[in-house]
Image (tube, rainbow, N blue to C red; front, side, top):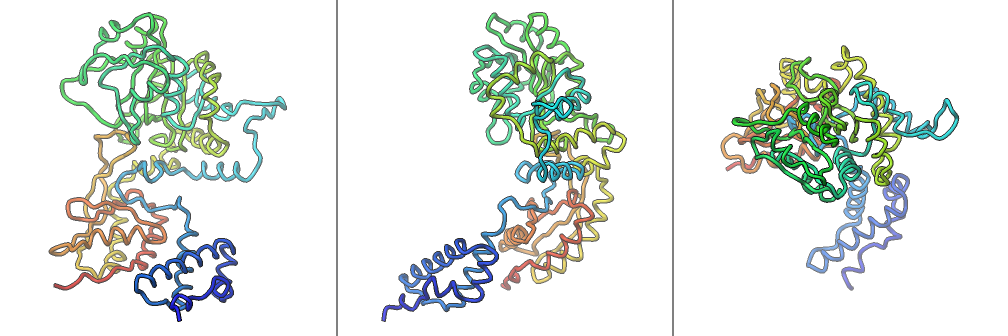
Length: 469
């Protein structure tokens, strides 16, 4: 008798009581597909000399596969990397006010492009334009899906088939291989780089202006710093030169913030208001970095230039939806009350969290981690750490922090890699970093109200003991 004939049929497994409960949770079509996958794997294994698995093992496999398939791909994680605005982990966490606004907009019809006062069609930018103008000092504003899109739209609208003069030291590349020269080319503009990597003067910009020049542009080098023998032309001087030649002067701030961070002991980061007051005609910046909101790109500046940008057909392809606008509006409203901003804006809470408070959190978490790792040949201790802001913001500045370090005793035998993978396999994955022979868990971004959830799931860690030698 052929061994493969002993495998149960799809219909037989579908009638099993455990499978019936899976169907209630996941649907017949999904479960049927998983059964077929299990049977196909069993047949292939049998052809390669393996035995025929028991029916219970097949059902276990189906249940496991169903559980894995049901997990969302976009899962919440514990960010213990030490990078506050981690691009791969979604950057800024929204404040509660923004979450509430987002949920309300998701649940209900809302006045996205409807003028309630006039009873007719409205402009979706109206949701946030007044707030953006108030907070930046600009005449007008518009919003697209991220800052790269904002820069592209600006160039395509105002400098199509024209030259854009930029300092050679500002031709940045950000994550995902986004490069200023490449985006200019795609937007139809022609790059005219001037000066040198470390020093560019006003005379360099002046000498580059020709009849086909479309604008002067400054790009904030938010993700790196050049130190030493350097010189950059102040925005006010560039604006004056551009206006003398009847050219627009634009500034790409990249990360962007709407407040003076020095108020909370953080390094200074240029703001859109500073650029507008210096004479910039248009400024672009992000929403999901230092600003602490959703992923958007904002353009603020002269009313006539914003109007031209909004008439560009590409603008529609880059626009944002109601959920983004709802959360952005809520975040912008927080900036109207700067005295309470650090208590209400999640990103600012994380950036200003005192080292002493983080160390206290480490002391509370330490016993649970030590207990979870007691079968491993490792030591766990509280250590001082240096967090980074992330997402290209203030790249050379570090924040005093604290956390837990797990170090192997003697040779590691891969224990740190196994532990790091085990933490990522938890129901709410824990993401740390391995550095200089230790697994480091920076607790800056672990809110006190989530400590209990974090420590409770450590008991789920399923790691084999360190092998004896």
